[in-house]
Length: 363
Image (tube, rainbow, N blue to C red; front, side):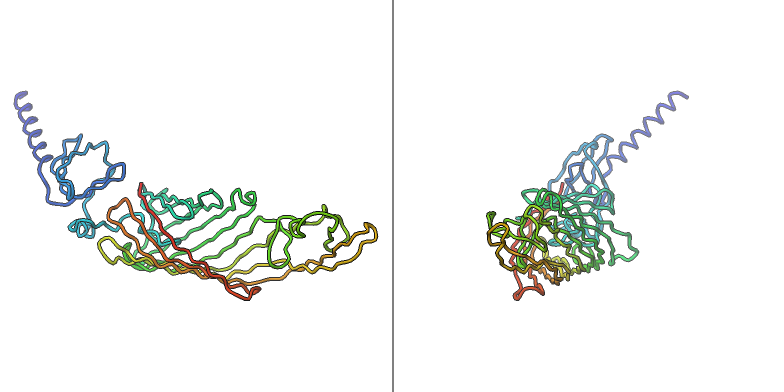
């Protein structure tokens, strides 16, 4: 009886090893802990490592302790793997336009960073549907915290998300400036080709304290008058220059809408379009000055009357561009962007070209 049990055990182990070593014709996607991905056939699995016939590198051994995921290749991934130099649509860069995002989430464990002319960004997934990002400039001020939650959709080609962009002036203006842009996204299409419509509300209050002459802001009274000296002035009442009340900057606020999209145009190239239109309201100070002779000091001084006037501003941001990507882990893009601002208190609109080159890196 004991010999029979030993024989049965040995036979079972032999059949088990044969099963483990039996090749399969199904393409599998293998993802390592460092983010490296392989697509191919798994030839054997001995419990410690797998032997894989990859599409690009041939036969490779991968220790199982280095593996994060093994799953069957989807139909779209399988189609992409048939053509060398292409990539699947399940990469984190597919969630991004130029400045705005679509409703697709970054999947957990597939984080990415960006390098722009103006500064770096980093975006990562806390869950498969909740993403967080940090954006700033090369001098670390101002900065913003981005959050987005993507909802599950029953429709394969319609997706929704809600987000918030919380802004701070940073060490510029002593961290006094702050604001928020809350938004909602609706995306039509898949990750490789889609159109996104977004709407939100912008509120931003500069931390600058100033006295303005109707065209510019300054941080103190003497800068406004062009320096200190005997020719100091009064605001509203006969008070000393040290007692002049400094005004806080008034907030800008109003709705913002966006239209963006990506369209795969080749094995490695994607056309990208981004835009934003906003209509905000603000308020500024207007100062009228009267010269007079002060008999007490024996000097000429100034009497300043401060009034306040509202204004409207409309800004338009347009950015067509191209993204080039041949692997899951790296991409770069350029955009010919321009922004224009029209204010009700100014005679001419202001337009600024913003050529951009951006590098993407998955980690």
